[in-house]
Image (cartoon, helix red, strand yellow):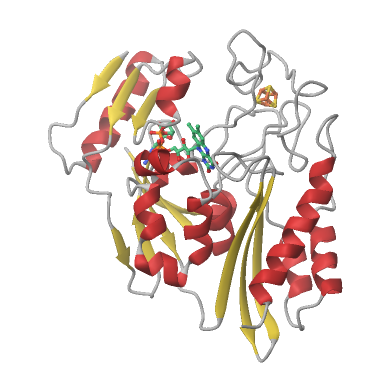
Length: 333
Ligand SMILES: Cc1cc2nc3c(=O)[nH]c(=O)nc-3n(C[C@H](O)[C@H](O)[C@H](O)COP(=O)(O)OP(=O)(O)OC[C@H]3O[C@@H](n4cnc5c(N)ncnc54)[C@H](O)[C@@H]3O)c2cc1C
Ligand code: SF4
């Protein structure tokens, strides 16, 4: 494996061109190295075998800046801890701060980055064990999680090829906030809304996002939120810290005169991607908060849930998680 060090610290184009050139030249995947808390882990397990690693830690992508529209632009190498404790994020986007602080450990959050968190891989045990078949790691080899150990895997968005859940907390908050992902490739830049960023597994579970090989995430942009917006993240898991979500809910609502004007809701732990169902949000908008409305929205969000042999409990857990989060975010002070 080759390690590529940038000659100039500030050269995003150099990093992207090196990745594109190496992809073409050697046919082996190129990986950008950010915090390394996913990549190095998986390289030690022999799950990731890149032909070249491009270290992006010296790129000038470590800033959190206001946008002219009143939102926030977050560099891809901003550490999860710095983002969670940023005063603007804590005050205006508390759901994101709470989601980040509920993940991993303090040490990991000091290393993990915004771009790396977006692309972290599933915690499915078969994916991480090269002695086992796995369609995501080795397309066409099979999925032993179906009918096997699947307690922590998905009930929504699954296919006959893969039932792996997206493990990130941050991604759930970004989905509820309607974030946009800025991407730089050798052929130019583009921006993708988070609703379109993650792919369902279908027949190609090895493809998890719309990123093409060699494309670099440079920034994540949060839109401005209207006055009266409240947000909250609730994570349910087997133990109180250092554990992935069994079910989690990120809720962002705008309130006026005791009614919900708008709502964006995403759930984690239960889907093959961070899960959002706009028809569930429509049930919440326009009326006063009530147990009946929250229950109806939760039923709608979970309508297509399909349990596996060990994880049917997640459907009820997710329902309660969402109702609880909605109660919290709409409670009067
Ligand atoms: C023990 C443990 C517990 C954890 N618990 C949680 C948890 O509870 N909740 C949670 O959400 N997460 C948890 N995590 C996951 C952790 O949040 C991720 O490992 C971390 O966010 C990944 O960020 P990174 O910068 O270290 O990524 P890296 O490991 O550097 O990169 C990850 C992937 O993204 C690619 N990449 C990185 N940056 C870019 C970029 N800018 N553009 C394109 N590609 C890029 C890399 O090539 C690699 O493929 C846990 C991890 C561990 C090890
Ligand atoms: S659920 Fe997906 S990641 Fe897990 S074994 Fe099946 S194909 Fe692999």
